[in-house]
Image (cartoon, rainbow over all chains, first blue to last red; front, top):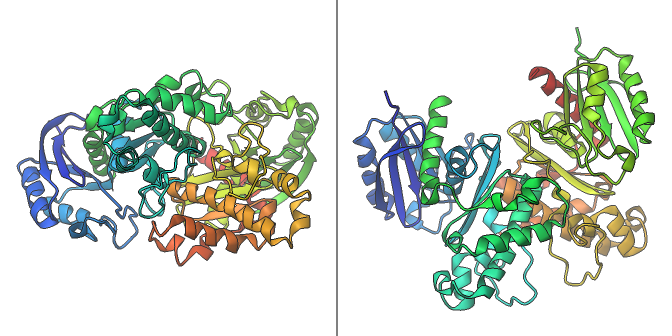
Length: 294
Length: 294
């Protein structure tokens, strides 16, 4: 008999909910707009109550508390989406569905999906970065999610400003961190148009690659992931990949001699293997892990 | 009966060899100058052959091959110490001693020592950074060493140059990466004197803290370790700790609200609990891990 698993990808504008199998196939799914918890969560629960799922995996927008020993484990923390601030997300789902439930960030779930069934299958580690409305990244190391006192906040790392770039940055915390300089809203504010309308403007994508490559170099120096996957809106600009790869090689300066980051770099920095399904499939993987560690 | 374990801390100027127990106590030790492998390794082996050790842990200068599936696993790689280049370190030790042997970098071993018995005991994760002749860091996450396609090279991350700092940097690969700007040789070249002779020069340590804090912020954003330990020569300058902590808080910009990096930061960024023994004790922990996974 097929074991049915649940997955929630909770985003700022919509919740994607899916039921699938232990091998990552999706059987049924639904999209629910993100309103308040009182409006959205009953719809989410109603969907899953139609199915007999044996475990659940949640990949949520953040910041969230992922530290199992914490009294607020499973809560959404200090989000600007005020109705969700301090919402005990994990508790509300578990109390209704009564199944083992894994809980992590949306980008961690996407990393897990790509690791298990996408571009990073057959590796021991990967990093997934999404560049869109915000910038976030998650990593899987030896089959486990990378989490410490908190989930990472890799979108807010320090980068060097391009000497010709006078844009101040849009991050309310750090101004010109990576997210402040290279997220979708940063592109739109700097160039006066959305990224999608700037496809032909070479200088836009060269500057974008300049910043993304710096971030990848930091991730490589610190984590040495076996595969790097770039998702999110910006990854739809196919021209970005060769620009980023070239710049990463240049910035590494020949320091690493491993083929991953030298002659095989085209196969190292890649788009998602699961396209837009990395997060929702990752939730199924998380559910499976929750079931196994029950 | 006491299980005896061996530990080697292989550095550029000396090898420290120790025999100790499963609880990290050192029973006997010796220091051997680093000459060529033909001169040094027989002395190392002679020391261990006097003892009946049941496992061994090696923390070596790098770069080294730590990837178990690699054909050159256990070798020293492209080091400027030419007699050691491509030396099959792990193989030579194992073939003579015939015990399970763990193999990692010197900084990873130090991180492991601090995690098990030093400043980071009672945590699930820590990062150890040494700032001295070079800059390197290692991390333990959920009890395991952080390694991907290679061991990390966290000393070579990108940092922002201080606007008043015209020093070009000493890294032969990247010029003004962290190591290029903040290592002992960088301090000496920039200021014309060794760090130890500059203790009273406040501006030296403020600039040093400016760079180290940037590195720690990158490590925090990416890894969220539960404890950060600064070792190496620069950590002997006690004034550096409050300067680094203050700068880290400033750079984080209130983005994390966890107490580790806010009100408890004095207890978060700390000197080694094992003083100069972190690496050699970490080798004993590595030996114990090798024995358990045999």
